[in-house]
Structures are given as structure tokens and as C-alpha cells.
Amino acid sequence: MRSSVLTVSLPSLKHRATGKVREIFEDKDRLLLIATDRVSAFDVVMRQGVPGRGIVLTRLSEFWFKKLASLCPNHLISTDLATMPEGVRARADILEGRTMMVKKVDIVPIECVVRGYLAGSGWKEYRTAGTVCGVKLPAGLQESSRLPEPIFTPTTKAHTGHDEPLTYEETCDRVGAETARRLREVSLQLYAAGASYAAGRGILLADTKFEFGLLDGALVLADEALTPDSSRYWDAKTYAPGRGQDSFDKQIIRDWLEAQPWDKKPPPPDLPAAILEKAAARYEEIAGRLMR
Image (cartoon, rainbow, N blue to C red; front, side, top):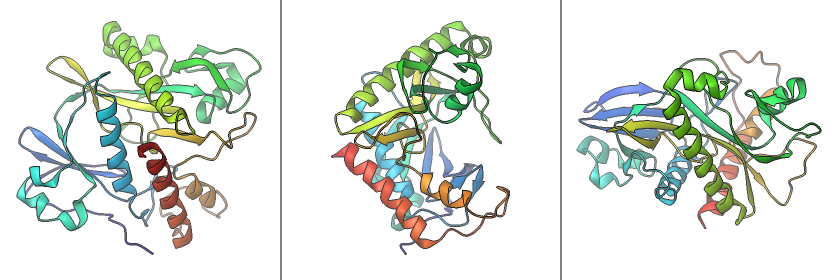
């Protein structure tokens, strides 16, 4: 099996944070976001990584940041290692293709979720209440149904555990009415642009989440953009409402874990090489289809 990058050490730079996937380092007024090949499921980081996953996530983020820049500025400076500190260039063997140099921004503490189809936690809420994050939806929708129009369903931004859904009114209370209005407006515009582009390549963008920051008072798209980690992509050819859909993401890993005698607490079971390679192929397929 191909090797995976699970850890990154850059002694010459200040280490800022470790996420489930990314390592974040600081270089003066810039940050370096390094996407490893780590993968998590059910909020547990697996012991094995998906080969090349971090490179796919970085390539797609760069692709979408550039494509959507006319709708909203973003924090990306460069993915070219030649523009980065010497300590990064010296580790080109593992950092090439998986590193973004970005501007520091003040992150808005809201996950901006946009849904165009009824799936996941939204489907669960709809079955019991007929709503998603307080948004009333028509009766009679099925799992995976296309919504009459995309809806903005924000959540909290949790550092540990699960993000919690917020109503639009609760979002206004947290960040102010004007910021909430702008978050909703821009998120819906970005989703519409991404969904339209993906549809032209036979891909349905079921839902996605955006993260924003403020830079000199202006709203800036941050973190990642329309990757398989932040978005639910479906193949238009196999789409059929009334059931769950196969996603271009780590679903194959979740499905395998669900079949194991595991309580979803650390330590996780070891993932078979065949499952990891199949997951890697799904990531590479969605990147290839979107970026062709």
C-alpha cells in the first residue's frame, strides 16, 4: 500500500494547533495549513491514513478558492513551497501539494452549512419535526430529496465533540444581525456557484459547510472550500431520492467500521489496506471529475 503522511514536525516554526486532519504552523503574520492523510470517523482519528488524501483536499481547496474569488475573497496566499519558509522547503518530500500559506484572519465562530438536498442529520430532524435547524420544510419529502431551494442551516463551531445546530435567530444573537445576514447571503451564493459548476460535471453538491473570518473588517472565506471533507458529493447518474446515496468521501470507511464490533470509542480498529485504497480512489475520482 502507498504510504501516508500522519505527522508533521517543523522545529523552525511555531506550532499553532493540531486538528483531526491539519497541522497549523505560524510564520509571522501568516499561517501554514498542512493537510495530513489522517482520517477520522465518529469523531475518532484512525491509526492509519488514506494515502494522498491531504493532497486532494489541498488541491480542491486551492481550485475552489480561485474559482469563487469573485464572490468572496479568501485567505489563500500560495501553495507553492518556493514561496514558503526554508524549514518548509526542506521538507518538500512530504509537504509538496499538501501545504497552504494563508493570511491570518479572525475566525467567525459559526459553521455556515448550506443544504440543497435532505440528508444526514437534516433528514433525521425532518422525520421527527418537519424542520432542519428551525427551517420549516414541505411535507412529504424523502431521504435525499432535492429541496425546493437551498437553505442556510448554521451550527456552532465546536473544538471538541459535535457541532450543534443553530437557528438563524440564534446565529444573529451570537454574531450580530448584520454579520449573520452577510454569512447567510454569501454562503448561499457560494453554494449556488459550486452546485452549478459540479452539476456540469455530473456531480450533485448535496450540502456543504463554509468557514469565514474577518480581515480588516471584510468577510473572508477561510479554512477549506468545497472539499469532500466539508461537502457531500453524489454522482448524478446513480442519484435516486428515497434512499441514502454513495458519497465521494470517507463513507466506505464509516461503512466498514459500522460492521465491526467497535463501540466508537478510542482505540479504533485497524483499517484494512484495501479499504484505505478504495477510499483514496474515491477522493481522487471526485478531484479528477471536478478539476478536469
